[in-house]
Image 1: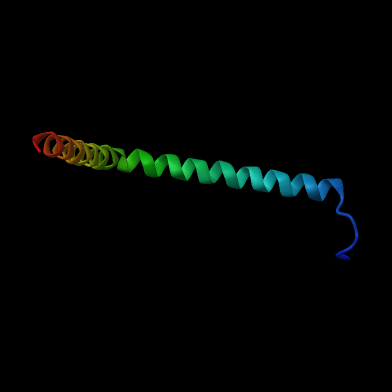
Image 2: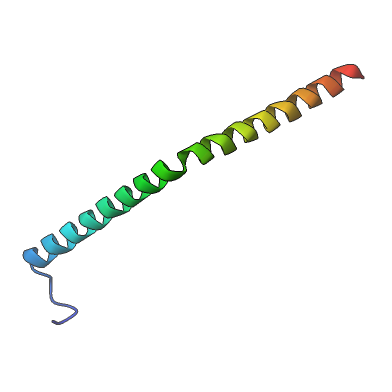
Length: 66
């Protein structure tokens, strides 16, 4: 096939379907990964939130003390 020749509608349709199918597979895989690791994600986010809250509270308390 010549590079300058326009692609047929069937080829463009096939390429679009393949890309959509690939996207669906990627989303499915990401969903399965999050399904397996969500308790760890929640734990990490809670610990990060507690550390951030403690640092902010310490800075506020330290500023008011002086």
